[in-house]
Amino acid sequence: MKLRLFFVSVLAGIFAGVAAAIFLFALAMVTDIRDQNSNWLWGLPVVGFLIGWIYHHFGKEANLGSTLILDEIHNPRQPVPLRMAPLIYAGTILTHLCGGSAGREGTAVQLGASLTDQLAHFFKVDALERRNLLMAGMGAGFGAAIGAPIAGVIFGMEVVTVARLNFSAWRECLVASLVAYGTTVWMHVPHTDYGDISIPEFSLGTVVIVAVSGILFGLTARSFVGLTHVVEHFQKKWISYPPLRPLVGGLALIGLFAWEGSYRYAGLGLPIIQEALRKPSEWRDSFLKMIFTALTIGSGFKGGEFIPLVFIGATLGSALDFIWPQQFSLLAAAGFAAVFGAAANTPVACTIMASEIFGAEVGAYVALASLVSYHFSGAHGIYRGQRIYKPKHRRLMSLLLRGE
Image (cartoon, rainbow, N blue to C red; front, side, top):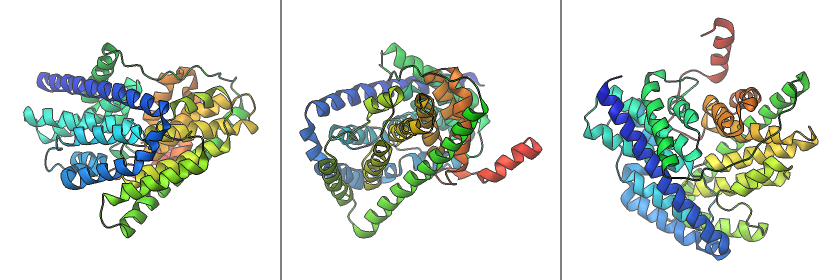
């Protein structure tokens, strides 16, 4: 690794870490404000129109979000616009202030990649180096926001192409992700503590239950992706003026919140995820969170899908208590990783993430659930800019039969 590229990777990690830290502090602040006064939910249509209007008039290429970053990795044309960082930051904060059901790691990924690309342009790196740095920026933002730096290393290499790890960028991803995480620790970012889970003794029955649960997790991820795309397609078909789409989505969300009554599905829902790991959840939690999130993201609100998918997966796994009494927490941890891993086509990164968060003991079970989930989720996921290296089932057969 060239000394100059190492230096740029360190800077990319610092930028991603600082951006993630500032963002997480701001997100915690607006979440507290909303939790103390649920009337902020009534602002969803106004905030939705404001986000839509700003992106319509000033977003330009930044409207594509993560798709633009992945497109630039595959087919470099021009630098990722710096405006992406402040736009996604402001859009996500406003979405969460008014209770939109969205995530945060998608924002951190865009922040990390867009800031890293400014460094790549400033230091005049070549096309291959820029490609690797963009992957490093994405992974650094992801790992810094979650508090899982090794998962960030793998995420940067795995998210670009379905069924393939891009090892050419491993040095840049390793340096940037570790530095980004170290920066958040230095800035005293309070990463979420999900607590400990109990691990049962190994048995064939345990393996079968985890594998079958993985099928359900994969189908759930597939349903979420499909539902989000349906909402987006419907909005574009019937509403020609883009700023009106999140306004209409905001009105629909208000109606859903009023009908549901508890506001349990507003914002990130981190307490519900923690609760799902401590006691069995109800079936309605995963289903309703999927509806709220698909409507939020599909209508044009900002924030990403990671935490909502973690919510869906953890509560779904926890609700399987009737199949496997007293071991719901393991299935909740498996769903925590497997649903997002399937929807994002990043099962390896999410297996490592779960091991970093819950301990290495869960690794084998989560790996099994994630692998099965990944193969039942379909070819396309939440990141439209991903390229398919090889269909999932063909890739699996290659690995099993030829050891490729």
